[in-house]
Image 1 (cartoon, helix red, strand yellow):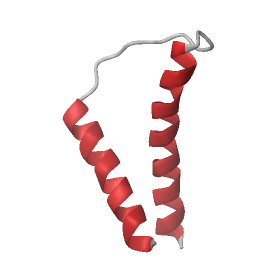
Image 2: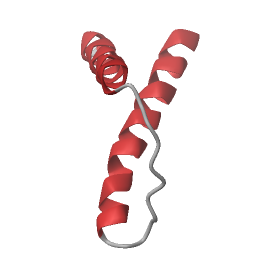
Image 3: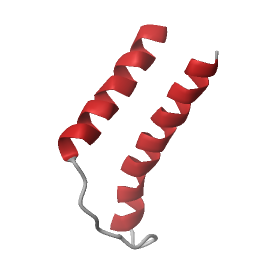
Length: 56
């Protein structure tokens, strides 16, 4: 159960990051740019979706 809560938390974190783009586009949120490792981010996101899919 604890692992599922952690997975849900990570999933929510990634979804919120993606949703912020709509706020930026509507000028409701200002962008703060920083370098990220896009490959690592994409792998983490894919892993979270894969984990969620397995529980369905």
